[in-house]
Image (cartoon, rainbow, N blue to C red; front, side, top):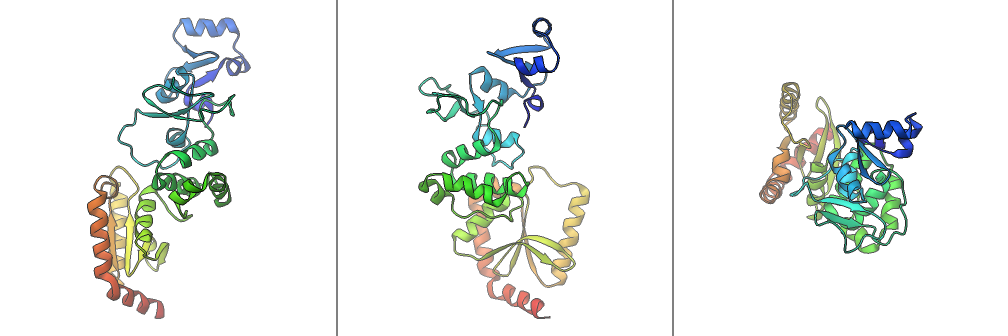
Length: 283
């Protein structure tokens, strides 16, 4: 994401836009610009997290930069604890920050936030395996990185981090789907993603006779989306297929009970559901 989109700019960028040093000083005096760090200015409406990091002589990275690059980011307990990096970051790290890249001698990049690849490289080494997988799969799903580019990031990471993250799917449509599919596969289930059903379209996942639709959105669907979901449900039932919908809240706010119920449901549907799917495929 460009600095201009974040509402910040370097003095050299402002000069390249045609402003003079005198005009920059006038803009600061009138409140149109704010000097936040040596060589950095914030415009009206600048991203507050970016400004906070720059003011501390740092740059956003990891999950915070990933979110600004447009990735699906798992919900966090404290959104004001920022992930930052700067050269020689050590004991002086602010209390509100999680530090990355303390061994750097100079800035590897000049932008106000870490590039997507640098942010993900930091995330691979920082967050838990599931959260890292969510970010990496989101980068693939949104077309920001290729599978090969994601694999290169993993190959560059220490082995212990690669093992913690495990396999990466190129088919997940949201972080919610990543969490559910990883949980099922961790229990030994064979999960297919983005399965096409005649008259229905693509369904998020299929496991042991049960089809899953997994909501990756924080807020409720529009009336149109709600009606389309009900149409798809009815079409699935006409085929005699079992479909289970999981909400965003179930996946992220009550995951322990949701996972337990999901595994029990998969076990119950079992042979009957698989037999019906086999019949449809043979028809």
